[in-house]
Amino acid sequence: MKKISGKRSADDAKIDLTPMLDVVFILLIFFVVTATFLSETALNAASSDNNENEPPPDDPDKKNILFEIGPNNEIILNGNPRPIIETQIRSNIDQLKAENPAASVIIQPDNSSEVSTLVMIMDAARQAGMANISIVEPQ
Image 1 (spheres, rainbow, N blue to C red):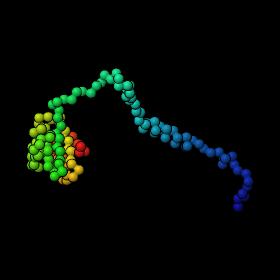
Image 2 (image 1 turned 180 degrees about the vertical axis):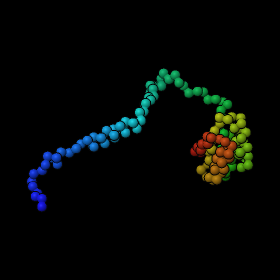
Image 3 (image 1 turned 30 degrees about the vertical axis):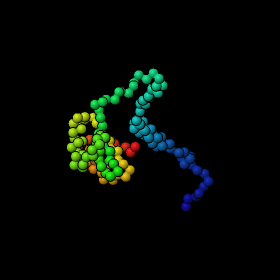
Image 4 (image 1 turned 180 degrees about the horizontal axis):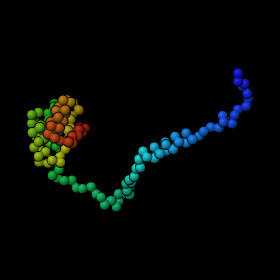
């Protein structure tokens, strides 16, 4: 049998740090390589007194297509006093889009109107290829 002694050999007391340093250097290289360097952009937040970039004037040719949905689900196009029927929605959008391709569709439903009428107008606008469709609150 081997005697258990209170003395330890010199080899048992040393800790080899080489593998730990290798792992630390590998992690350092990994983080340096995978880091993304972002260039920050800043906005000039100077006072608007000397603002040279004024908004462009409203273009009278650029008119939006406004659909108003009344309380009885009647559909009014661009403030015309005569309501339109469901089958005329798509043809009206196509006609107004041909006149002004940059126009967007704005829908203003009444609080007591049905959602199905709103969805019907949105579907017709999407089928006509309108990209900008907005819903606004009633006045």
